[in-house]
Image (cartoon, rainbow, N blue to C red):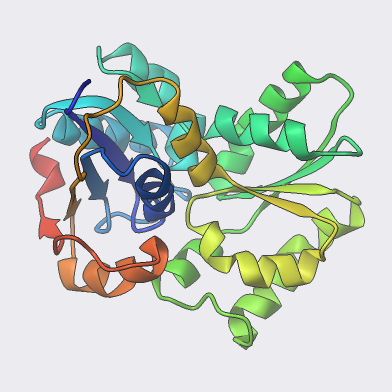
Length: 266
């Protein structure tokens, strides 16, 4: 057994959707979570800035005795995963390939949609991975830049005209393409899954990229012993705001309130 913690980081609170799934399937594991709430969102940043932030996030998590790092951020996974993984001896798992694998298993027609931040869509990584794994797929990508601030501010519920209006506008090209599977290529987006599902309809399968990454971790690591795992939370700004929003992402209360860290020190 290996009782060292699993590190998880994201640009804000969205990565808690991956932590939620880790809690469900690996309840014995300790987790260290870092949300870079002072610099969210990453998806509008340049590749150079995203890499800088990712390196700092990894260095912070390496302070702890961790056995792996989950990059619960599609933007970092798309832009910087290969570089930061090559720079450390701790296994690093991103969200892109696990989400692609689930989508490949789910699609019936070979028409897959991908929604994400501008940086994730611009990188083209989902289309490359999907078509490399199965040539002939039809992949349709769409940036949804305002979904992250909506999630960060709790504007995610059915009946709220703001997310519903944006979802209809953003998803119109994906609907027109006739996809049967839609990858939520940002760990914030599952908070909007009710609204997204209402727009896409019951015949479209939604793939939660954070949950897919969490599920892939289980088969890669030596598990912890028979014990109750503990999770600590760190943020780069506004712990009170994080503490208020986090239970909605976790589907339950925080085990500990978030602590603030000066990420510029790393």
